[in-house]
Amino acid sequence: MNYVASSNDLRMDQDIKYLEIRAARDYMEHLVKNPNQTYMGVIFCNDKWEIEAGIDLPCKFETQTSSKLLFYNIIYNSSHNLNDPLGGDFSATYPKDVLITKLKLDLDNGILAHFGRSSLKMEIKIQDFPKLALRFWSGMDMVAIMGAFLFLIPYLVNVIF
Image (cartoon, rainbow, N blue to C red; front, side, top):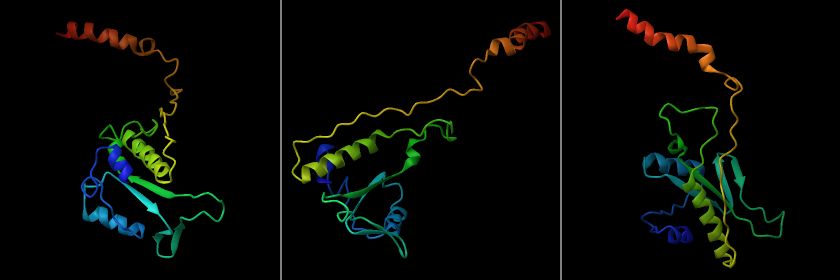
């Protein structure tokens, strides 16, 4: 997180706050106690992450591989991505969030730097998911269908007045 703070001109303990949280409900309680103060959170998991009583998510995978693996989650307020107050076009793809993408890139580069791989630097390029045109509107000519109405209305209004 120090790498993320330094690469984004943020201050630890002011802009970035460290919380020691053991379970998902603790994080949710923090969000409820501090409304509108958290845009995104990063949860690093070292041992296990308790989802609910008796349900744990393991965070150690070194038994399956000889490499050092790190487990983290980025949790963010997805309501900031909605452009339209009514929810927008539900058939459209979910919008990308450049701040979350930048955070993930900084986290990954910070992990590389932490383990002494500072010569490696990740770069990413993002693009929108391809959007398909609706078949209902393809090949439709609104002037041919509604033209008689649309071209008649101005003259009809003049005749009435």
